[in-house]
Image 1 (spheres, rainbow, N blue to C red):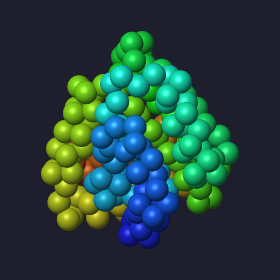
Image 2: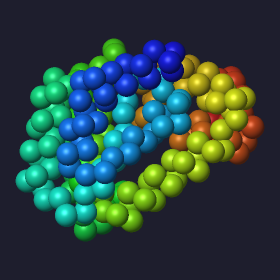
Image 3: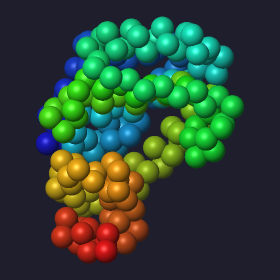
Amino acid sequence: MTGDVRLEADELLQARGLLALASDVGETFVGGSYHSDLMIWRDLDIYIRAPELSVAEYFEFGGRVAQLVDARSASFRDNWAGAVPDLPHGLYFGIKQGDPRRGAWKLDLWALDDADFERTRATARAFTARLTPESRAAILDIKAAYWVDPRYRDTVTSTMIYEAVLTAGVNTPEEFRRWLG
């Protein structure tokens, strides 16, 4: 399934112009499952190096993205000051076309300071370098089994799947269920 969703992502990023729109704001990096080629559902994580971007400028950008993708909902967070320590320093938009479990796109857009942009890109590259053909296949099998589960993204996350496969040697959805305990 990853190939079909990846082609759709390329269409959205390139042909429809989402990446060009983001590049107008600053240097971009498409991370997450797109970067690691582990896409199961329509979710893109786009990071933009834009340390001087104002909230007003980001809302203008977010409005253009929402219009481009025919968004149905959006959420915003200003974390420039680092009020939420576990999140990057920057501005965030979560934009949805509708229900991702029914085929709609979900976009996570971050405008970041230089340090968090570099840290995010380095982390993604280091993660992808750890993948083997076997671990990639196991992750895709497990994600395919879980992404439509209502718990996915709330109590069962991709990060948990990655950890189970890469650190605990989990290889199947059944083994992952046991690993979750």
